[in-house]
Length: 255
Image 1: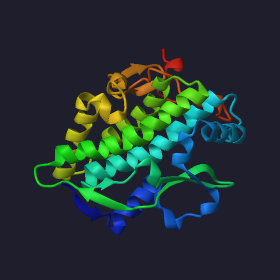
Image 2: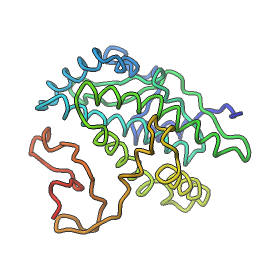
Image 3: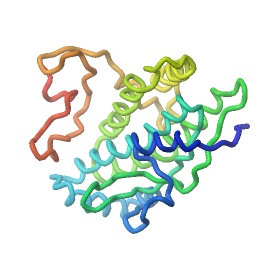
């Protein structure tokens, strides 16, 4: 049984300022889209087609890839940060999330939550609680969205899942556990290890863990110093970049 909790104000402020997660009441509903609507293939297709025009993207497939990169940052990153740093589980179920845009500023500026309650684990039950937090978001929200977008945009699922994976890796390797707080380091190390090496595929709505295959060693090349982990798939960011700029870890520019 999980304990009910809430984020305190400074926790909300951090998630909002660094990751774009907000309470729904703070956002205008005029430019809001329910994430649940995107599970409908027709509505998802229409959304991606409108976004394709806005991004001047050459195809719906490339648009879907860019959308998933942004959506993963706005959802999986604050969810996992709250889990591993605050020891709190946020409700990022697909019914609770809305996409918020600001015309003239960002095509997807925030993700907002209607219900901002949180959970905490009972003593000695953190591993059970962690599974609940992971499955509620990855299997029931992100995984379902990837299924639909892969189908309507004809984009391979590995591209979309690697878009998620690079966000998760960056969060744990560059932000969580780098402070002196020993408890944060312990939670972060254990959670990262579990997410990429131990969590079963069912927690993600897949037969196998979709993050594990993308976790490789950092390598050096003439385009990277210090070494970095090269992607296995290309996200096609260069197709929508105004200067045809490649990601620093793009497999197409490695030597």
